[in-house]
Length: 444
Image 1: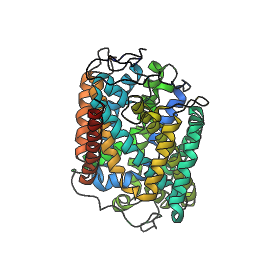
Image 2 (image 1 turned 180 degrees about the vertical axis):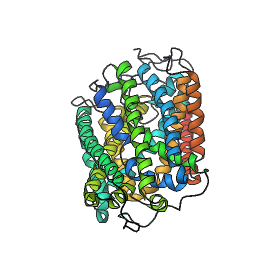
Image 3 (image 1 turned 30 degrees about the horizontal axis):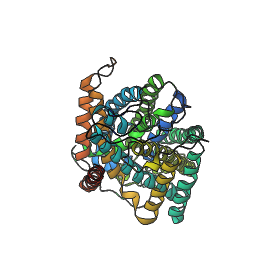
Image 4 (image 1 turned 90 degrees about the horizontal axis):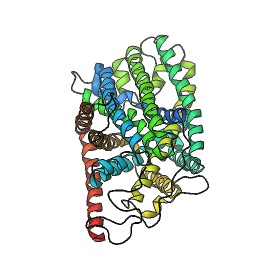
């Protein structure tokens, strides 16, 4: 594959055309291709079944009410459009960075930057939220110290190389799948008599609304749970035979996650009273507590902790690779593009992401950022669909109308999220655009 970017020569010497920035003087340090279809699928599915499967149903039910399964279906349909676009682009551009790279190559520097900035900022906040969720499940009184410890340990795992990351992801995914199966069986065995005590804390969400106006914002929150296949695309530089592996892994991971989420939505609505489901802070725990298998609550808690660790591991990996790609193009500081020779990982980017997450954990309440992250990720995938629309060679299963549907769907879900989420992430995106504009002017 050609190594040129945006028309600049590989040497990056003086004499470039007007308006083009110089690329780094030395060639990029490349990552090694070590992941096959199974490992790539496990990373994507582990991301999608992370902390989201244990917490996302309650806020979605509070918004959608009895139409929760429709919200899951809408989110899954938009996610499919995005997955097809991601698979097509990742096979064409098998580099680290995902849509940040695709947007730059197909649409230009600014759309790529907006996608990358939205992903890095939104997912860094998600890392902190997932880490704190882990702390609350394990020992609520020591949630923040445990969250910091989890970030430090998993950042260390990532520094050992992508194969170690994939191995730990497979182990954690197996635990999560076993937990989900246990919850499904407990729900099928039937509820206890009415009035069974709930495990979770006091309701954190309003009662389920009447009517169907909450389906779209609920689908926006559910989309947060489906967005894990982005991790496969951001690891494109480390995948063997990417033209074959990436599309298969993305579609397989999405199909598995959709079946699990839709099945759990049906079971939880059948098993729990609507008010309890909408008001629960731990719906899967409540489903088990209200069943004949209530003694398995500790097992579900352990599974939730494993899910959080798996999601956090994949999140740190994906954000680190996008940070690497942005640093290569000088949209972030150049040292973030350094790759270690021993384990072939972007160690400076990984350490920077870990440090940023720890700072968030110690300085702010990050449990309110799921909506922020959803907005950033939806903008990210809007750019994905726009970039895929411009591709000439297309497989039969990726028509252009699918890209249009995905683009419009992402924007609709983004603007129907809670207003605080929209305003906050819009301000973050605007700050990033303004900062890049000023840096560009200074360089010229």
